[in-house]
Image (cartoon, rainbow, N blue to C red):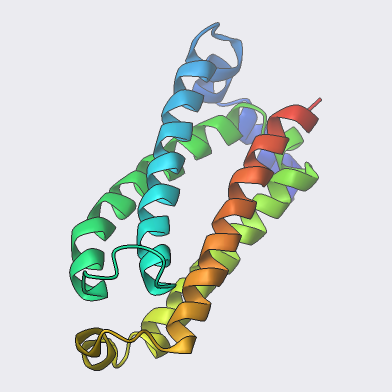
Length: 164
């Protein structure tokens, strides 16, 4: 089964048809998706702004991450579920939409940036966090993350305006 065949099958599943054809189902799912994305981006921004030294400078990065990231992960789960449901409703059009493809690529880049930060930048976080001086690598990861998430939001908003 090729990609387009799979996408056609997906958008013809009963749940995808219901989302597409029911008058208020799509808007409700989309609303939960947007709220989840707001929470994801908002909580990540809190950490990124701390890494950049622009906010919460009197708080340890480790403490801030411990408090905020559980909300990030929960919201990300909701965003993935609702986003998958929205995608299924019109899979062939979404899959071939430039802004959807850009959003997916940016999400992958955001995941790589986070992985690099946690594998490399956060390796000695206890040392630099206690000293109160964020290293350039951590600041860079925070700045890149912030820019990527802004681009994710912009790409996501453009999907709806270009999906015909």
